Image 1: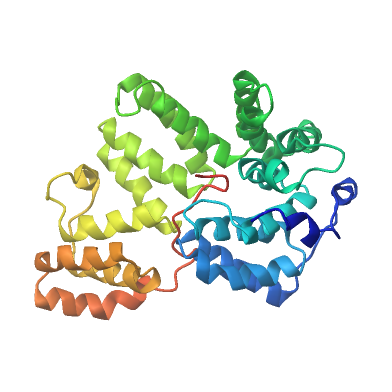
Image 2: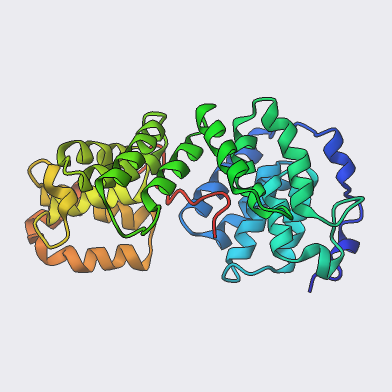
Amino acid sequence: MISTLRATLTGLTLATLLSPMAWALDEEAQAAKEEGMRLYSISRPKTAIPYLEQAAEAGDEEAMYYLGEANRRLVMGNMNQAALDWYYQAAQHGEPYAMLRLFDGGACELGDVCPEDGDDWPQTALELTLPKAEAGDAEAMGALYHIYYYVEEPDEEEALKWLHRAAEAGNANAMNWLGELARNEGDPFEHNTEKLEAAEAWFRRGAEAGYAPSMNNLASVLNHLNQPKEAWEWMTRASEAGHMNGRGWLAACNVAPNEGGRELCRGAPEPDPAEGWAIFLAIHEEVPSTSSERSLRVYRDNVTPEQRAEGERRKDEWLGLKPPLSYFPEKFGP
């Protein structure tokens, strides 16, 4: 499958990395990229591809990387020719995660798609990213956390050092990662107070920096720490930031706050079933899925015909909000 990739990309070499180009997208290409990223973030990789291609063909390296991700997700996380093509193009522009994906896919070993003057994609990623991190690039610092687990001699201590440096430099994703690591230390299903408080500190920093996944995680941790009022405040803010889980909780706690397993609803205000139904309808319209269909089916009996009719009238209030709904997938996720 990948044996022909080298031939298809002969016009690109890693020499371009020595003088990276800054690409400014025109208005049309930028709009296409934003729509492609929105669709990708709500698990619509196939639909996202044509939009991302428009931005990538205009030279946007982030779009190139996400085209690799989108094509890979179409085949259940495995590699295909299209994914490898786009990862390779992103690698030419210095995208370290694309290099790690190429390594995962065996691009060098199986298809002779290797870094120029070498055969080690993780090492190339390290050599290109480390100087940027040392110069203060917080995104590069965060990338080093992953890269140090991929190099020939993985260095967990160095990886964590750079993750902390990324967080201290203002990288909210790194703050969230540190919260996840603290919460999941040892048995990830054991929620003892010490672990939760350590996680809370990092999630709070990420949340206060405006990072929606940290808001969502902070709400969960605060709920486990028996602080329901503040937990609900942060879940509401996660919803306002476009987090799908936050919006779903907002709907569920308005419709059926007292059903089993709804501890997060403890801090919610008086329920408004019509409002909850409006939110469920808006979610289904903005991000239609088997999950949103199931929510409408499961919660229908908790809402009277009059409340459902009122929800239909209020639905538009929940559509077109900015930022749009998103699952906030990790850039370098599974």
